[in-house]
Length: 255
Ligand code: UDP
Ligand code: MN
Image 1: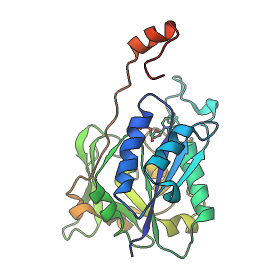
Image 2: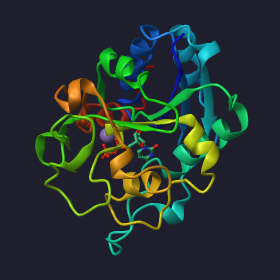
Image 3: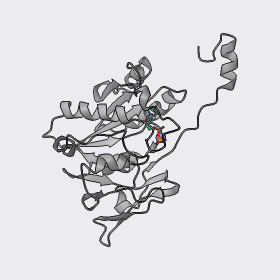
């Protein structure tokens, strides 16, 4: 039987949220071994997310949580060394939930799945190959100023010996959040592994991975890191100029 994959998605309210989450929910409909931990950046869970999960038939294999990013951690322009708090609080809440709710004796995989990226179903087949005690890695498209950021392997394609990253290549793990998934047992053995606000921009991946693995222990996947199965797409900020004009007349297009 396939190991369960726990996909952790921080999400926040904005005009495109429902569209992004609908895409993800339909991907989940194709992947029966996934459990979706969706953590809303809000003071309560919302009917939007609840009904979306219902409509996709995902109630039994999803967990809807919420935690609002504290206002003091919203990025201040004057403080460039502190990362924007995108998803920190939410991912940590999901990890706390996992550490208390999963059966520790059953092999499972944890994947941090942002709501705006583009994922192939094939990526999830690759993740199921991750061995207990290991972190699987693969290329990510459209990130870090490159067409593809990827791990570089040794001659027999068994070990990661470097990375092709152009952006901040000196990071311990110069890879995107979408470039890896983690065997659940590592989170149980390493309770200190959490995301932190007190890291430089771009170091969030390195911050979590340094507690869990080493470069040498990474398990290369996706056809020896040749295939691109996930893209760091970003959705354009929705322009609502005409909607704003309507609202000044007390109307809205979606009422
Ligand atoms: N996110 C969030 N609260 C915020 C901003 C972002 O929960 O205030 C979520 C977002 O929905 C996504 C993840 O955090 O799942 C990463 O954010 P984003 O995609 O904006 O980051 P980027 O693509 O710029 O790295
Ligand atoms: Mn994104």
